[in-house]
Image (cartoon, rainbow, N blue to C red):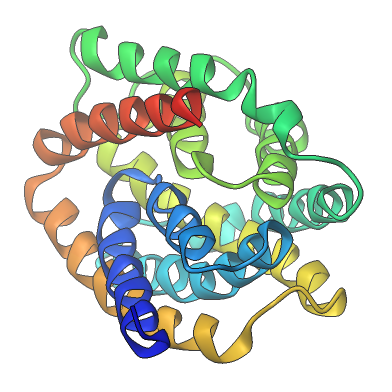
Length: 248
């Protein structure tokens, strides 16, 4: 295929990833393989993915916030910690092989899929939290953020499981707040990859526009259908990502 066709296919993949990621996370399942198949080296694929992901997570965050689904001021400290954690993870990504995480990640994702598939009474209604807000912000958020900077795919799913299982959020509220923390973690990882020169800017910006549009559509679908859409799609995405990693 000609370079122009390859770019168009990658941009189309970014649109689809934006839609899926705004609802259930896992957009990296689509964009990172697309970048690698397009001939981008692994480190540059991670960096370019961070650039375009900013548009998708930012778009979804804005859409959820405008509808009142995100307590932005309350979550800003946690967002800052997600950003710092991702920056630390991205620094590790420049020196460590991501294959180390790839060996255990499929089993974690399968566990998340099973939780959302079989956990009874999952809905958009909040429940009792299992950890304090401080513990959640100081330990859980930076840990997931550092994973996002180091590897990436599945970050939204990990934030989702944390919000639902530990913070007691309903599924729609968890999805909305996941987007804010994911946006913050994308900023941290993006900054490190940009400084290291690991980003294809033109391609990343073109993907970003497609991500922005896909994420707006995905957020609108999630707010319209709530847990009825988010729960099954999250199960499918986690399972697909796990199988993809096991296959590779």
